[in-house]
Image 1 (cartoon, helix red, strand yellow):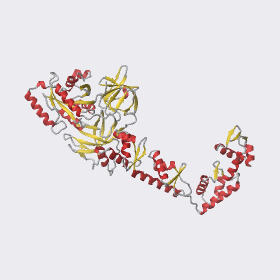
Image 2 (tube, rainbow, N blue to C red; image 1 turned 90 degrees about the horizontal axis):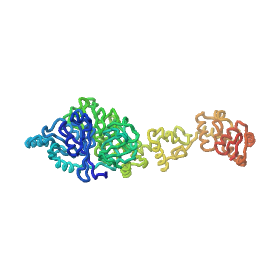
Image 3 (spheres, rainbow, N blue to C red; image 1 turned 90 degrees about the vertical axis):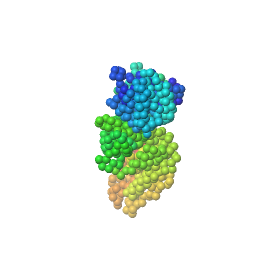
Image 4 (cartoon, rainbow, N blue to C red; image 1 turned 30 degrees about the vertical axis):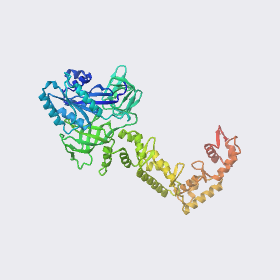
Length: 634
């Protein structure tokens, strides 16, 4: 089946027994009641699905939801992915309790298009029908459906169905298309197995596209699977696009590991959350929502228990008053997938009732400290642009933020964030692939902290040439990625503010300055080892004879070793470079020949206690190569 130019998901809503399922059957020819119990009891219990190509280039996918108050949880799993609502009100009953609850849910979810169907119009006379129209219009005044078409229909006689189709087509054309160019995200609303195929999941493709043979990830859980087959409206297709009802046959994934509420996504692009900040609107009909109250959170097809904390609450008795809104933090009992500007519904913990709706702002917010200014970032998430959000996120992070995290927060690809960062003077792109962005001010703070740390090191270790890069990285930037400190070091070195020497780093103006007694110790050490030739004293015997304490003596020795004046052969043996170079020249005359320990002792005029460590040193330096009991001079 070729891609329709416009795919729109229509969700039914309304009170039980107002004819939602019958109306969908009359429009599409599909009975959406799948369960035997639904057919036996004559009520919809779970979600049902149907489709209709209402006109060329426009296909409607219907999600038929249960109307009974006991099954609102199932209704919420289906209505989260719809583009327009078909509000069904029976002409012989008018507005009923679940009409109101379903309508409020659609409003809170930000649905902006819809059509009103007055079903069972054949059961009332014209006068009653007009009264019902007035009552429904009065109820809808001031809402997103105040100007929506109101079509009397009869699923039994077919009256009004052509007019309803035309009204649905007009409303569907006004619905905003889903972003097929975005990252793949499909909230799972149904899981089952098909004989000969295996596990199948279904859902509305929220964004992106899905191809046969794609590798996908299922969250929560991080399980990966290969897409074996894709169906859209019961037809096999090579690719499904955003806005389409999609069935996905997954390879190698047992049905027992999947359930409604999971999310099928592009691998390594999204992450789950157990805590997010949000803007919450409390219904005027609800009771005050207390700080820390337990609630049920419904987001896309997922549902979990949570506690709702009012940001900036003054005292434990704080509450959101009915009809008002507030910034809140939802702390979830179970993880789910959420990105910024997702809509969700809150239901009272007990007894169950819809009380509020909200918009996810910061999907992975930390707990806020008492004096923390959280409002600017949340306001930016609510209504700001990409550049503003990126600026505030970078300012809140001492080391910047990765493109992967930015994507998991918003669903926007790294390329969008790179474009925003590259055009902002106050931001630095420290790395493009994978992306890492940092605030210029934060980078300057990090550079200053690094220079101050080096200054402290030099003051504490005046005889040491520099600090190890690894120690600076771990002590000052332990919770930053390794490349962050390395990038700062290279930038400061390029500006002449510090010197990188192998694995050591020092400030550019640092010089080893010896005190008088240290200079004396150095001169005595050098003189003694130069005079000794290859018959040097052992360090443990010689260092205590110097006129300084053991710690400073060791530092003087290390400075001479770093400068190459002395050469360490073993833990206890060091030699003056003059003697070592002379010995290497004598060995060079024997290049290609074999030499045993006795011959080497004679060549160097040393005893075995020096010969063996010297030979092992030359082996490590690739001057000699062990060959049985002898060495070959290279």
